[in-house]
Image (tube, rainbow, N blue to C red; front, side):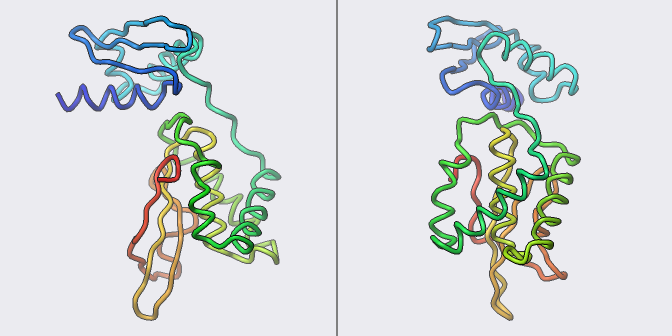
Length: 207
Protein backbone atom coordinates (compact mmCIF):
# COMPACT_ATOMS: atom_id res chain seq x y z
CA UNK A 1 0.00 0.00 0.00
CA UNK A 2 2.82 2.39 0.91
CA UNK A 3 4.70 1.63 -2.32
CA UNK A 4 1.58 2.41 -4.35
CA UNK A 5 1.12 5.69 -2.48
CA UNK A 6 4.76 6.64 -3.13
CA UNK A 7 4.38 5.82 -6.81
CA UNK A 8 1.23 7.92 -7.11
CA UNK A 9 2.90 10.78 -5.27
CA UNK A 10 5.82 10.65 -7.70
CA UNK A 11 3.41 10.66 -10.64
CA UNK A 12 1.43 13.58 -9.20
CA UNK A 13 4.58 15.71 -8.94
CA UNK A 14 5.08 15.36 -12.69
CA UNK A 15 1.55 16.28 -13.77
CA UNK A 16 0.40 19.75 -14.80
CA UNK A 17 -1.93 21.58 -12.36
CA UNK A 18 -4.99 20.90 -14.52
CA UNK A 19 -4.52 17.12 -14.24
CA UNK A 20 -5.58 14.88 -11.35
CA UNK A 21 -4.66 11.26 -10.73
CA UNK A 22 -6.91 8.66 -9.08
CA UNK A 23 -5.81 5.20 -8.02
CA UNK A 24 -7.69 2.37 -9.72
CA UNK A 25 -7.62 -1.42 -9.26
CA UNK A 26 -5.49 -1.90 -12.37
CA UNK A 27 -3.36 1.21 -12.11
CA UNK A 28 -4.41 4.87 -12.20
CA UNK A 29 -6.67 7.25 -14.08
CA UNK A 30 -5.39 10.69 -15.08
CA UNK A 31 -8.15 13.26 -15.53
CA UNK A 32 -7.12 16.09 -17.86
CA UNK A 33 -9.71 18.75 -17.07
CA UNK A 34 -8.34 21.27 -19.56
CA UNK A 35 -9.02 18.96 -22.50
CA UNK A 36 -11.84 17.03 -20.79
CA UNK A 37 -10.27 13.64 -21.34
CA UNK A 38 -9.02 10.68 -19.32
CA UNK A 39 -5.82 8.66 -19.63
CA UNK A 40 -5.19 5.28 -18.05
CA UNK A 41 -1.84 4.02 -16.74
CA UNK A 42 -0.93 0.47 -15.75
CA UNK A 43 0.37 -0.28 -12.25
CA UNK A 44 3.80 -1.26 -13.64
CA UNK A 45 4.21 2.10 -15.38
CA UNK A 46 3.19 4.03 -12.27
CA UNK A 47 5.70 2.11 -10.17
CA UNK A 48 8.49 3.24 -12.50
CA UNK A 49 7.98 6.80 -11.27
CA UNK A 50 8.95 5.72 -7.76
CA UNK A 51 11.76 3.19 -8.29
CA UNK A 52 12.35 2.78 -12.03
CA UNK A 53 15.61 3.52 -13.80
CA UNK A 54 16.28 7.08 -15.03
CA UNK A 55 15.79 5.87 -18.60
CA UNK A 56 12.40 4.31 -17.83
CA UNK A 57 11.29 7.38 -15.92
CA UNK A 58 12.42 9.72 -18.71
CA UNK A 59 10.49 7.69 -21.29
CA UNK A 60 7.28 7.90 -19.26
CA UNK A 61 7.72 11.62 -18.60
CA UNK A 62 8.27 12.21 -22.33
CA UNK A 63 4.99 10.42 -23.07
CA UNK A 64 3.15 12.59 -20.52
CA UNK A 65 4.67 15.76 -21.99
CA UNK A 66 3.58 14.72 -25.48
CA UNK A 67 0.08 14.00 -24.17
CA UNK A 68 -0.08 17.48 -22.66
CA UNK A 69 -0.35 16.19 -19.08
CA UNK A 70 3.10 17.42 -17.98
CA UNK A 71 5.45 20.25 -18.78
CA UNK A 72 9.01 19.73 -19.94
CA UNK A 73 11.78 20.52 -17.49
CA UNK A 74 13.38 23.90 -18.02
CA UNK A 75 17.01 24.14 -19.03
CA UNK A 76 19.66 25.04 -16.49
CA UNK A 77 20.14 28.74 -15.85
CA UNK A 78 23.20 30.32 -17.39
CA UNK A 79 26.02 31.77 -15.32
CA UNK A 80 24.89 35.29 -16.23
CA UNK A 81 21.32 34.56 -15.13
CA UNK A 82 22.54 33.21 -11.79
CA UNK A 83 24.49 36.41 -11.17
CA UNK A 84 21.53 38.64 -12.05
CA UNK A 85 19.17 36.65 -9.81
CA UNK A 86 21.64 36.74 -6.91
CA UNK A 87 22.12 40.50 -7.05
CA UNK A 88 18.40 41.08 -7.53
CA UNK A 89 17.49 38.88 -4.55
CA UNK A 90 20.10 40.61 -2.38
CA UNK A 91 18.70 44.06 -3.21
CA UNK A 92 15.17 42.81 -2.57
CA UNK A 93 16.15 41.49 0.87
CA UNK A 94 17.87 44.77 1.77
CA UNK A 95 14.87 46.79 0.56
CA UNK A 96 11.95 44.71 1.87
CA UNK A 97 13.50 42.58 4.61
CA UNK A 98 14.19 38.85 4.68
CA UNK A 99 10.81 37.90 6.18
CA UNK A 100 8.80 39.65 3.49
CA UNK A 101 10.92 38.10 0.75
CA UNK A 102 10.20 34.65 2.16
CA UNK A 103 6.49 35.37 1.89
CA UNK A 104 6.96 36.20 -1.82
CA UNK A 105 8.46 32.81 -2.62
CA UNK A 106 5.05 31.43 -3.59
CA UNK A 107 5.15 33.87 -6.53
CA UNK A 108 8.78 33.39 -7.52
CA UNK A 109 8.75 29.59 -6.98
CA UNK A 110 5.13 28.48 -7.57
CA UNK A 111 3.89 25.15 -6.29
CA UNK A 112 2.50 24.08 -9.67
CA UNK A 113 5.99 23.58 -11.08
CA UNK A 114 7.12 20.00 -11.55
CA UNK A 115 8.92 18.67 -8.50
CA UNK A 116 11.42 16.24 -9.96
CA UNK A 117 14.35 15.06 -7.84
CA UNK A 118 17.43 17.11 -8.64
CA UNK A 119 20.74 15.42 -9.37
CA UNK A 120 23.80 16.13 -7.26
CA UNK A 121 25.61 17.35 -10.37
CA UNK A 122 22.94 19.96 -11.15
CA UNK A 123 22.94 21.30 -7.61
CA UNK A 124 26.75 21.30 -7.43
CA UNK A 125 26.98 23.38 -10.61
CA UNK A 126 24.42 25.84 -9.29
CA UNK A 127 26.23 26.04 -5.94
CA UNK A 128 29.54 26.87 -7.63
CA UNK A 129 27.90 29.59 -9.74
CA UNK A 130 26.02 31.15 -6.82
CA UNK A 131 29.03 31.22 -4.50
CA UNK A 132 31.38 32.42 -7.22
CA UNK A 133 29.15 35.43 -7.95
CA UNK A 134 28.58 36.04 -4.24
CA UNK A 135 32.31 36.22 -3.49
CA UNK A 136 33.14 38.38 -6.51
CA UNK A 137 30.36 40.89 -5.89
CA UNK A 138 31.08 43.66 -3.38
CA UNK A 139 27.30 44.15 -3.19
CA UNK A 140 26.41 40.60 -2.12
CA UNK A 141 29.62 39.78 -0.23
CA UNK A 142 28.83 36.18 0.83
CA UNK A 143 25.29 36.92 2.04
CA UNK A 144 23.87 33.51 3.01
CA UNK A 145 20.27 34.72 2.78
CA UNK A 146 20.66 35.89 -0.82
CA UNK A 147 22.52 32.70 -1.78
CA UNK A 148 19.90 30.44 -0.21
CA UNK A 149 16.90 32.24 -1.71
CA UNK A 150 18.53 32.41 -5.15
CA UNK A 151 19.30 28.69 -5.15
CA UNK A 152 15.79 27.83 -3.94
CA UNK A 153 14.05 29.96 -6.57
CA UNK A 154 16.22 28.79 -9.48
CA UNK A 155 15.83 25.11 -8.56
CA UNK A 156 12.07 25.40 -8.06
CA UNK A 157 11.57 27.37 -11.28
CA UNK A 158 13.14 24.41 -13.07
CA UNK A 159 10.66 22.12 -11.34
CA UNK A 160 13.25 20.52 -9.06
CA UNK A 161 12.77 19.69 -5.39
CA UNK A 162 14.42 22.05 -2.90
CA UNK A 163 13.90 23.12 0.71
CA UNK A 164 14.97 26.47 2.13
CA UNK A 165 16.01 26.39 5.80
CA UNK A 166 16.54 29.18 8.30
CA UNK A 167 18.55 28.07 11.33
CA UNK A 168 19.72 29.54 14.61
CA UNK A 169 22.78 29.08 16.82
CA UNK A 170 22.45 30.01 20.48
CA UNK A 171 26.03 30.64 21.58
CA UNK A 172 27.09 33.01 20.22
CA UNK A 173 23.69 33.86 18.77
CA UNK A 174 23.55 33.87 14.98
CA UNK A 175 21.12 33.18 12.14
CA UNK A 176 21.92 31.32 8.94
CA UNK A 177 19.99 30.37 5.79
CA UNK A 178 20.63 27.61 3.29
CA UNK A 179 18.82 25.59 0.61
CA UNK A 180 19.09 21.81 0.49
CA UNK A 181 18.58 19.67 -2.59
CA UNK A 182 19.96 16.30 -3.74
CA UNK A 183 21.93 15.99 -0.51
CA UNK A 184 23.79 19.29 -1.03
CA UNK A 185 23.36 22.69 0.62
CA UNK A 186 23.67 26.18 -0.86
CA UNK A 187 25.51 27.67 0.95
CA UNK A 188 26.88 25.13 3.44
CA UNK A 189 24.53 24.30 6.32
CA UNK A 190 27.39 24.49 8.84
CA UNK A 191 29.70 27.35 7.81
CA UNK A 192 33.11 27.16 9.46
CA UNK A 193 31.96 24.06 11.32
CA UNK A 194 29.21 25.86 13.25
CA UNK A 195 25.97 23.87 13.45
CA UNK A 196 22.63 25.66 13.12
CA UNK A 197 19.29 24.27 14.27
CA UNK A 198 16.53 24.77 11.64
CA UNK A 199 13.63 26.86 12.96
CA UNK A 200 11.91 27.35 9.58
CA UNK A 201 11.81 25.13 6.48
CA UNK A 202 10.06 26.14 3.27
CA UNK A 203 9.21 23.57 0.63
CA UNK A 204 7.74 24.12 -2.82
CA UNK A 205 5.38 27.02 -3.29
CA UNK A 206 6.85 29.04 -0.43
CA UNK A 207 5.12 27.00 2.29
